[in-house]
Image (cartoon, rainbow, N blue to C red; front, side):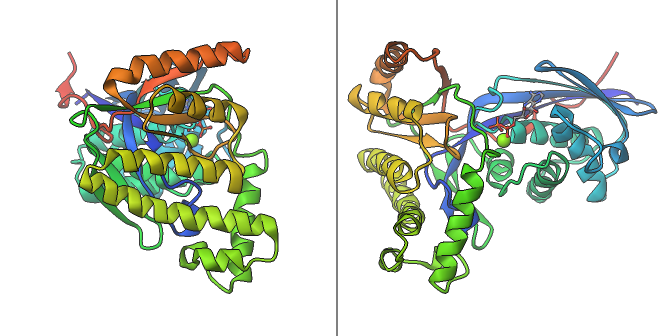
Length: 372
Ligand code: ADP
Ligand code: MG
């Protein structure tokens, strides 16, 4: 029978814990309100057809047509999921699938993983499966495989985990040493606060070498300390590194992991001033020790703090992308305006503003309905 499913998959922001995933560390992402919607209709036969409101190119083919090396552009992320689902043993029927998104593309809010999760959840729902916790976890691996092997963008799984496991009013404490994911209450609204997300519209490029060199430096620092990863290092260890740059890189990672633990404690205690202070400390560490910020991100953070934010930081890999600010709801509009004014004064294009309120993870929007 022909039927249609509609699925929503959110973007995400990382509250704290940056460049820690590949160091077997901790991070604390939340899903945001901006999301990607996939509408999928099961076809009686033939190839699948994928279209996007954000892209001109239509992709048509079977799962095996989307094996690594065969697809490029946006379809690598979407069709790549169909291929990875087949690899994982899921029987997905041919689909007419259309996506539309309010997550800005390439802004560090993970439009890529939102796209993957929307396609994955739409496909398994169309196949008649129920999206329980076990299925969510296996879709994390499927989406990650599509992005890494078909789209060719190495990803540590932070984005896919955040998007598939998120719950409203919760952040997700991810531990990359043991793969655990724990929900932590982040009831900003009840505290009279908002998480503002500012898209600098400076495109972040993970391919320009900055990301790869940071990863290599972290591995080198761990190796010099005789450790497998920097997760096992202390600040005292980092201070023994003779190479000044490696010392600062390690200091960031070690201190950032501690800040995630402290942020979780502060959230559980409802100590929002402390949460804000940790956000700002994270930014300073990323700016000065890890050196992955940029002028536009620093401008958002400095301006938000001056305009009354409890804390602010760049979020994501850096070199552009987005920043977050924790602000009293009564100051939210003033902070947004101050950032706009600062960007205009600096001769920069107007930044984008999004709501960072912790939202639901990927899932079907409507019950499966028979088409007419
Ligand atoms: P980010 O995940 O931070 O937004 P990426 O570079 O990882 O940035 O992923 C962006 C890419 O994902 C886009 O260039 C495009 O290929 C694909 N993509 C994301 N969302 C969509 C969408 N709604 N429609 C089509 N392609 C999309
Ligand atoms: Mg991405």
